[in-house]
Length: 211
View 1 (cartoon, rainbow, N blue to C red):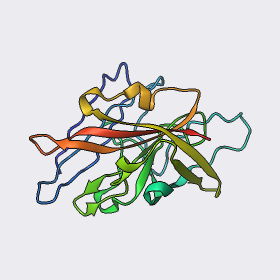
View 2 (view 1 turned 45 degrees about the vertical axis):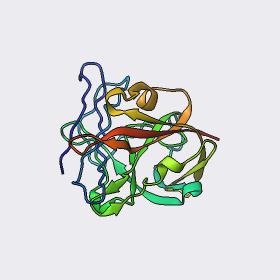
View 3 (view 1 turned 30 degrees about the vertical axis):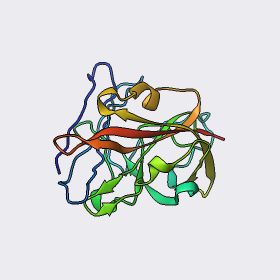
View 4 (view 1 turned 120 degrees about the vertical axis):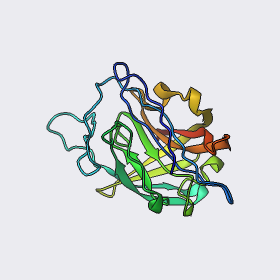
C-alpha cells in the first residue's frame, strides 16, 4: 500500500504522522497521510503500543488517570474499542492495521481523554477490506455526544464543537495537537476527493470538548 508522509523539522516539532488508507470501488488502493503533531516537548524516542508514555495533569501521588478503552458516537452508530497507537521507529505514528479497520486508536503521545490537553483518536475511513470505523464521521453534527470509556469503566462525555475538512498541505497542526489548558478531543480520518495518484487530498477533523 503506497504511503506518503509530511514531516516537520525535528528541531521545531514533535514528529507524528497519521496514515489512513482509503479505497474507492473499482479504484486502486490509496494511501492517505495526515501531519506532524507539533508539541512543546522534545521528540520522544520510539515506544511500542504496549509501553506508552502517558501525559497526566494529576497531582503527584494521586491516582493516575486510566487509559481509554472504547469510543462511542451514538448519533452515527459508532462503537469501537480503542487500541493504543504510539510511534514507529521512523517517527511516524502507528495506525490500526487494515484488517482491524473497524477499530479506532488512541494516540498515546497526546492527552488521556478527559485530562487537560488534546486527546487524539484516529480511525480509518475505508481499507482494502471495505468500510471502516470512521466511514460515516462526516455525518457527525455540532453538539453530538462522543463517549470515551476507560479501563476502570468510567465514562467521559465530549460535545462536538465543530468539524473541519482541510487540505493535507495546510493541516492545522497546532490546533489539533498543540498544547491547551482545555480538556479536548480530536477525531481524525481521511476525507475529500482523490488526487491523480489515488490519494485523498483532505483530512476530516472533529473537535470536541469535555462536558
